[in-house]
Image (cartoon, rainbow over the protein chains, first blue to last red):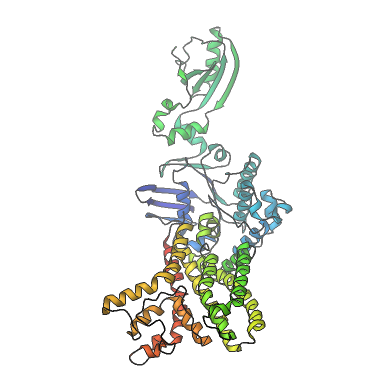
Length: 318
Length: 298
């Protein structure tokens, strides 16, 4: 069964196409990362799923229910942390949770929820008007968790959170996923999605450009891993010809060697050592998903990743 | 067991009770009633003995501006305020329909306006007794009821405008603009229509539809009903002397029954003005809801 299914979902605001014929499938029980730069149409898509915004074209179902016809029924089973939220400044944090519990007809204990999102008794007794952005975000996340929803929709959940809060949020997502909750979670920051998502969809200019596992995306882009070498001088050795080496760049005394085959790294080091180049330090990294993301969301597309180097580096001419 | 508009109303009222706005407005209203009651005597040109009913008609004259003012201040942010702050997105993530949100907001703000007016009128009744003697109980209850009805009518206008508008500024323009139109432009426009149709200004005698058009203004409807309850004339503020009527015409000449050719039709009976007030209490909310129902709340 599909938790979220959109068919040719389109939203135009005047001349602007915010979401352009989106076909999205999110499986029940998975953690799906909905990625894209700001303005890609993530929030508009989520707004249509929640019936805040009406599609110009196309249809969408959530948990098998039509987002327009069955909106109220589906919102009984969905927990939402919307983007750009506001809370009721004059009411306390605890009162917000009490309302959420009442409105979802749930039997949750406010204290247990407060504890899960990292707010204490003193915080709960204060008016939300005195809360920091991060505290409001925690409280809103708590309100979304009330009633043990079957689907959790989190729109940019980490905005306003400090690193500690982000970690806690990530743990919550994992906990919820283990309980069988489907989590649909949007972000423009990759690092946050990588760690928790089963699958990732990348949205650019209102259209999905890729849907895959984090691992799969890396493979598609062809960026296996990167070897970083600190060297004293330009080695003057033809590394680029080594089997499995994709690209060599040098900047600030670093050689950055992109390898499609992890075994190429050892070959590069051996080759340099044999040539008598002094290597000061060796470091290796999986290609950052950031590169993958950039590749998909800039006009170059996947085929041109290599020319999309965003840092000022010069190619080593051996 | 699901959620309903009552949940929205309860949340809204609870939120409003904690707001300085409600208590500030209540205080202003009490102060206004006190001042106008104390100065009621000065509102009458000739030195007459002012009895309770006359004092109340003076209060009614000022209340026609003050009560709508309070209701609009309480109501115009009801829906659009939440829409702009983003709390509507939270509210609508629970299983409320948009209709329930508007209905709940309307009920919540009615309670707020009603509370402010009840406290104000309670304080006023003490003053009336102290200053002008005990008024006829039925008269006083009627006077308060009409005042509350006026408050509710304008709360509806405010909440309707609030639901229709996409920004606070537009809600303000829509609601306060309507009110200003009723105060300043309604009568001139109706007189203008009369002139365009008949070629002359309405005189002491005029067509019945002219009076109907005038009375479709909720403020005029309030003046009619309050006047009927107090058995005193309640003048418009400000009054535009646009009709072709001698300035010193005796009150009797200006009685509606003396200004019409035949029988007073049903739509010019006093009770019809109550219907007009009630209609104004419903139509704007329904119209606002229709627009809100189809709006993108992104």
